[in-house]
View 1 (tube, rainbow, N blue to C red):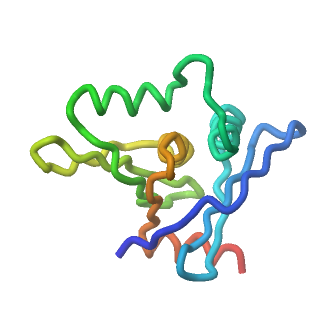
View 2: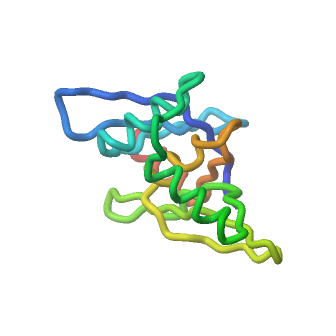
Length: 138
């Protein structure tokens, strides 16, 4: 059963190539980091700040607009797996006829799409991923 998470922190450092976002359990205490690239970290950081409007659509805006143009709605993000220190995710879209489609995505891109919405789309993590991610922090 997926667990709902929220974006808790974004750490951007100019001293390293890897940036960090932390996801925290909505109705609990568990939290874990995901290493991401500078572009995604900067985009996510800008989107969670109030009143940021990019002068032109960014890639994550394009994904949302394509889905909408095809009659689908982006509903949520699922961090679905963890393998060899790499997280895997899906964007969950609902078609106009009610079909649920899951699109493979990097977690950073999926979360960047989620925060293009106001309020942000729900972010879920599969329980086995959350267990494995948080057990590595102990």
